[in-house]
Image 1 (tube, rainbow, N blue to C red):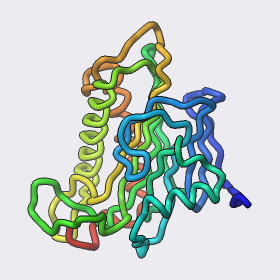
Image 2 (cartoon, helix red, strand yellow):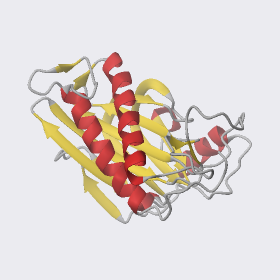
Image 3 (cartoon, rainbow, N blue to C red):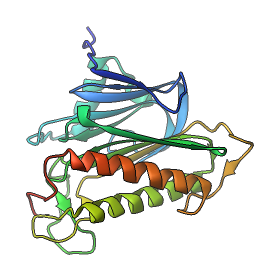
Length: 242
């Protein structure tokens, strides 16, 4: 029997009847009526492929499974989702506190859905311990829904711009790691980008740098959503090193 899915919030994204986001205490789910092109750094469904479901799942800070991918596949199946068309992330942050930011232009639209926890905040470029497996499911998880036509290269470029906006938000709010270094992220951040591939205004996004039409939308939404998520996270300082 499939697990009953109870949601506390249901939101429509980008004023489109097909983009419905369900948010509950256990996980949030963005499901599409047809598979979309997705680029993801997630441990489950990572890479570039077609997916019709994106899930950000809350787990405890003590979550340490020997095979997280297998456990996630079993969990998805119990909840009634198809593991073959689903991208899944995990976080110890409270997913019901996800913050959503949207921006539109004549070339398309972007919605950013962000959850944030910085207990394992870290600064890139500083040497420290290395783990063969992720040591802590704290994480900043970002989902970007792009309503527009994009190239594969511009999707990669959008990841760069999203990370730049993430670092800017962390810097502006003074987030630090446990040693007091200004954080650039956490040790387990993830990003998922999904694109409708429907041209808006006949425009094809071939770039997504900060000054491009797509990059501008990505930067604005990620910065605003992450800033909001960090402000309600409860702490802006890492608890573990790194």
